[in-house]
Length: 316
Image 1: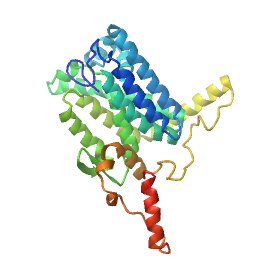
Image 2: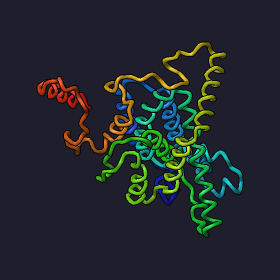
Image 3: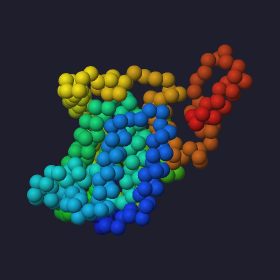
Image 4: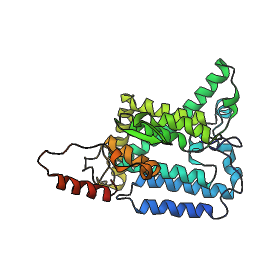
């Protein structure tokens, strides 16, 4: 999330990304998509929507300027559209690209585990919850602590939802991750990223990212919210089925998908954490630092060595 004219989550300059840079970054993203074993439809659909809005914003920035998340406008004018639309537009090409790369891997894992419809509802719920928390925190700071600044700061971007999704993926992970050179428990990595990004990118919206983390924890520990979303996904699936006919269960299911072997899908918390952090620290992390896994005692040392070499040769 970035603040307009103040932070990364949102400067909306009229000349941003008009030099072909956006096309080049989009092609890089498409290469990542082509390498996926499976293509998550909702994740890719939301990415396409945000790219479409971004390219349109470059042509008509004046249309999108009124949709940044400004707590004072939301409260004073009840402009509730800002709560949703602000999360789908971005400052510039790099802002969009980095968010979409992060969303691709998170959606790749979560959409498979939740099912497409439930994942769609979950993303929508987290988007609204995150931005509502931003407004609430801004009002509390202004009225209770005489800190009116956040009330008048405007921001755009999908980063808050990404922080929430990171919490969903890693909240009970027993592993450790390296974040910007710091080794921390994976379940707390989002908090460290929150602080580091705030100092490395001063224009970023600290409050927006923090509210994303809080939204993730609210979802994780609210069984009622999860039950409502699951029921909503089931009702939506039946409604769609009544209109267009039976839905292919492989492409669209409302219940968690059956488990697959860890070598073809990153199902466990450990594997999910490694995959999501891979781009940042894999090159600098020696192979021996990976947690050893137990093996049957009857396997010979040569066979064990062969299996380990094959495993690392396949990219872990």
